[in-house]
Image 1 (tube, one colour):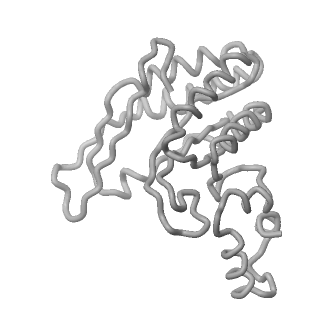
Image 2: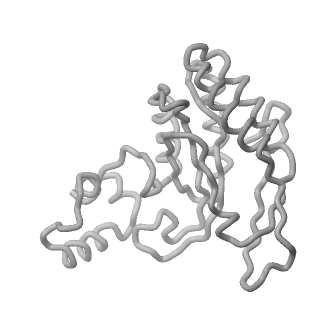
Amino acid sequence: MADESGKPPPLMLINCCPGPLALPPSSSASWFWDYAIGYYLLELLLWISTFLPCLLPWINRFFFRLLFTGKVENVNLSYKIFNYECRFKQHVQDWAIPIEKTKEALLELKGILESNPKVVAHYPVEVRFTRGDDILLSPCFQRDSCYMNVIMYRPYGKDVPRLDYWLAYEGIMKKFGGRPHWAKAHTCTRRDFEKMYPEFLKFCAIREKLDPRGMFLNAYLEKVFY
């Protein structure tokens, strides 16, 4: 999503290749910027913003420009690159929409936040792209997709009001044919999944055949399959 200047945010480009590293390990990481500023100071300011919500837009813009407007380049083994520390406690929603709907969805979310300044929303909106697959309950089943991820941090474990932001975001995702990440928060039930996944009933039949007594069900999965 573009910032106030209209410039698009920087992209993270990851090149995966088998075999030994073509270049020696290197990193742009810095304890000062990544932890002292990007963790401890951010958490403190977000906690203060729970008492003074008017500070939040400033905090979002400040940290976005401070931490995400420059080029970052890391070279290392994959597990050292992909293991990302997610800072402090947080609530997350992450949906996959058809890749061609990316721009429309981002602009609609931007419009809702700009027209409702009292809605509390933390930065960033994370965007990543994935090719389609043939896995029956994959959010990317039979279509190239864009994952749009929104975060609400919990500074020092304190919950921040998120319902308005959550419902607005989820409404946009459903409007554009989205499917929620299975390991993230959502409000969907079986009725929703039957509309989202062309082969949902086929998967349910396979599941019931392999687990007729429901040994592998829990409260969450009962909401999904029943």
